Structure formats: C-alpha cells, structure tokens
Length: 135
Image (cartoon, rainbow, N blue to C red; front, side, top):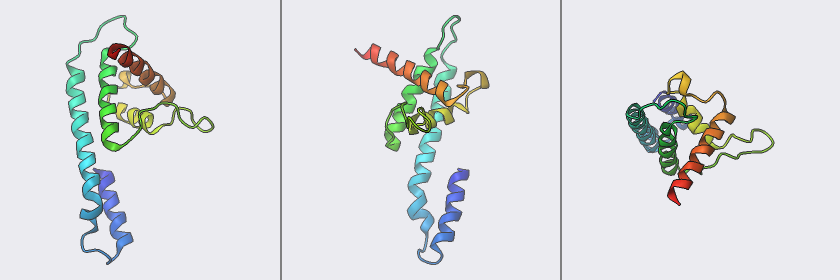
C-alpha cells in the first residue's frame, strides 16, 4: 500500500492540473491488484499453517502450495511462469522468480530461499512435482 501511496504522489506531480482525479483513473486498478495479492498472501499463510511439518524431507509440500498460489497470482498479473531469465545478467531473474522470492520475505527466516538462484531451484522442483502429479 505504501507503493500505491507513492504512485499517487507521482501521478499528482506529473499530471498537475490535467485531470480532475488522476488517482482514481490510474491507481484504482493497481490498488485492486495489490489488495488481491494481499488476500492471496493471507490465504497462503492460512494454508501453510495448516500443513504439518514432516522430518527428513528436503522440501515440504508447503512450498508446492506456495508455488501453486504464485502461479495463480502470476495469471492475474499476466506474468509468465518461468525461472530461466536473461543468461547474461542474471539467469534466474524472471518476473515470476523475482515475485516469488519477494513473497518469501513474508515467511519465517528459516523457510526463505537464501538467494534468487535458490528460489528458482525450489520453484523448478515444485513445478516438476506438479507436472508429475498431473500426468
């Protein structure tokens, strides 16, 4: 919501007197998307809290649930689900991986990926498990 507030200031500054209410015209769709994303994050937290931890497993099924949720969010935002990015700059910096990595910051520290590359690997493993179960 801080980002939306900042964008309101930027639009006000750039529009001057051009529009009666530029906030409503430009920021209402952004505000709705942020609200939806927040709702999804709350739902994800509830789902994650309901999944019991199992010892000895490399990845919990909870991460697959998170990836499923992020796929749904990506669909709403029009983001392609991919983990292979620009091979020159950062091979893992796709919009989907960056979004998922940012959402992980809301998780407890021990559940977060230590790097964008690690996040991409976790996503890839979840996507493989996901495709294996749908066959």
